Length: 488
Image (cartoon, rainbow, N blue to C red; front, side, top):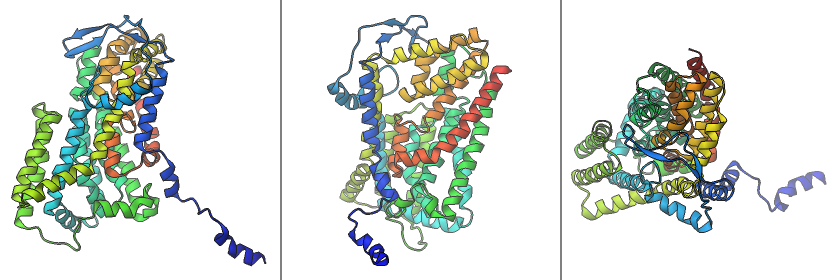
């Protein structure tokens, strides 16, 4: 009887077993997480006292900066439900006190989507991937350190961040064909550029702005930052390579293993069978494709381009490639619109992330949080001070994901306190950029993070599972370097 009952049990059960995919589907989407954060910040505007620092023009920074010692209470501006609903909308076009309009980044993402749609319609990318993988067979793992180093160079020299969004759709199919997963591709770009920002050497959007705000030359402390860059890059490359090797040996160990089939179907939907040959037109398309990215990097690093110029570049490149590929007018428009549609969710989520900063500014609690941080680290020893400042910058980085915005907000207030703790001001700059670089590998308030995960179809909870051990290792390394800087 017991055997019969045991055999019959599955047929009588009306509740199917819970799978990993079921649990993942129950985890809130990035849209929900960000909107809940907006509601939480709105609720805090009813609890925290409102306050502001006086601000004065700073010629070195080219914008207004807080004046130390001028914090004062102001009339409260609690934010209600309507304000919370308006925040994501304002997040697209309201630059608040720091940073650029999110609409610029969102439009760039849509144009990138259109550009990739046109390129994909020519078949050049898929054919090129098939040929490249055939030639690299057995040596695919070398692309991880090479590419991560290149992205790190972009991060340390000019703060490569939003620009990386253009590379995900190109790299993810290559990495999947190589036997890895989408998380590996996202990590190569996001962690590669991120560790470069964490170890910024001459990054004008982090090191230079923060050094000017702290009143020190941006070259001061560069050797310590170089140590952070090289050591951090080595740690990240080894971590990503180790994960990638495990996934290739056993795909079930991927943090997105349950999504493997649908990711392959999505990212490799146009990949041809076998190893086809490139046509003459496709070769020209690939040359133009690579040249477009080269021009983008040149424009950003040498000409001061930003989102508008980059969007125009990719729009023009789309037209040229569509013409070279002989798509025809209507197929070209359809390919561009379809490509933009694929990244529409990414564009929307960027404005939603920006809404968190908008509601904090409108509720006048940003400076209140900064003032509390200023008081928290006063009077500590040199090591205690720099550790305290690092963790305060970590907290502020979650609230202000823009590295330049955080520098303008926090450094004029926190850097002078270093004089009383016996710490060099350049070390406070290193602590600030380390904290900002660390947080911007994971924060859901960053358009770069949520955009990368959306393009890679990596759920936020899976990314946390992947990156948490790396964050712990990097934190220990950074704290050791900061302690070394404090005692030297």
